[in-house]
Picture (cartoon, rainbow, N blue to C red):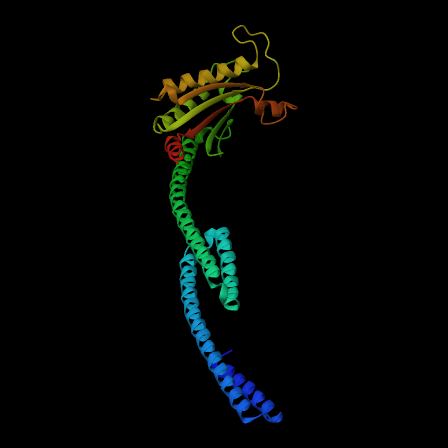
Length: 319
């Protein structure tokens, strides 16, 4: 209630009292005393109204300052973006609590000290959230940089692998349709050679045509020193019999892989540490061993070429 309205109420009360006094035909002495008392009471109430009005103005000014501070805090927090949605939700919850506290402050200004303390705690909490948001943004920036470096290393690896596949395919083009295929899988280059191109049945001595193909491959490997080479020998599931140096398909597949390693080393300047010979026996077939055609596909040697991942591993290890 503002000053003018309150004063009007007081004047109305005074008129009612005076009207009552006249209606009762009181004496002049009583009337004068009653008038003085009303005037005194009116002055006291007007003074109280002025005092309360001053307090309301002061509290309203302080409330405006708090509101301005809160608006600034919201603007600062908004700059941190949608990346921190969870913390932003916390901020909005605090903001709603803040508005509720302001409403309580307006309705119950006699509790202003308690409300102001709660408002201060709310603002401090907002500042803590803002610091956390900034710290998380900094961490995201670092991780983004690390991710970019890893993607660059992976792209470099994929580029090397693609170039290697083309170089191998070009070098061995003359053997297409003769039991040799070149393809990429899982970031590696696979050179698959059927048994008919390399070995006689049950043997591990490489044929002349197979040696020619391996010489061409050795030159590619010599020109790509950052490539690791895994040679895998594979057989079908027919048991091996009648052999002296090898007892089973495990032995045969390992001997064939070793024979290829030796031919590569003789015909190219290749660091032996890059080469691995592995016998897989009959246990990784590409087709079920149910038909002669499928068994022929399973009797193969795979030369698996993969770029060295030293740079990529160093990047991962440093994160």
